[in-house]
Length: 328
Image 1 (cartoon, rainbow, N blue to C red):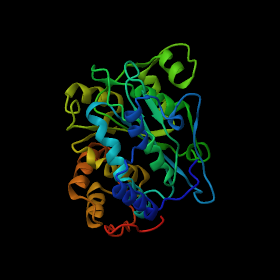
Image 2 (tube, rainbow, N blue to C red):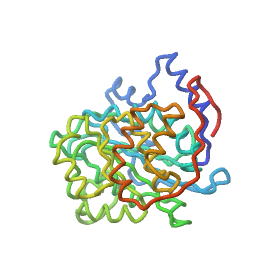
Image 3 (tube, helix red, strand yellow):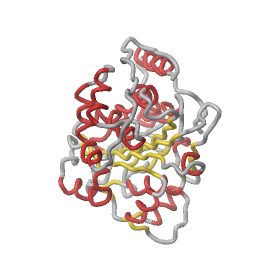
Image 4 (cartoon, helix red, strand yellow):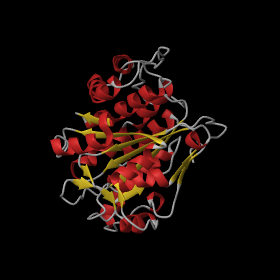
């Protein structure tokens, strides 16, 4: 997947049409709530599928980026933030030279012990199809009440059910951002993997083993919003820190999630020398100063652990607040 191109004009036209007609960007979620027919959207069903990110004439050096978020409890605002700022995210990545050919997969995670739709996984896309996938997500808002969600299932899927040319052809790791404010389970249960993905793995897999498999082909970050119900809990933060170290990004404002993703990728790609430079570039281009600052604060421990980078100054033009600004 990922053969189309991103167009700000087309995305802004969609957004304006939704606003004028009162339509929700999350059409499937609205459908489920209206009909009561709770089920994963067929095109977001992880059972028996693999997700591919491939090079093409339009995208000869594709770079795969997964963004999977918790849709339980207080985390329901994150998919809406991602959808509303999708154009800004693509613009930050492409026009600032952070990534020339991003292909983004969106997914959602809940609790396999209690939720009816615990895992939803879209395709890697380069164009408006990623907005379509966001519109197919059911924002269940459940969770089991035990301060844990099934992030392990999402990580297992990405480790074992994705095929990406950036990794397979060039040996370049993809990116994965998980977003959530609760703890992960200590292991992936074999029955959950069988029922949700169709894999027969024989026995449960420890979380550490899932992480090891994932990190062979992904640069993985977990964004933990600290202003949500569980995000400030020291036990939640400590568990994720034990698993991922400085790649746990404590984000004080979940509205800054797109800025955080863009700056994290730029740091890893070597297309950004310092967070101060990245923050000032975003602000000078018209992005929200508070969001840029929140992203920088969340990334500071990771950035401090990286070797110094020298890059050519970015060329992000001022943000066009008037509407469509064409194809990227």
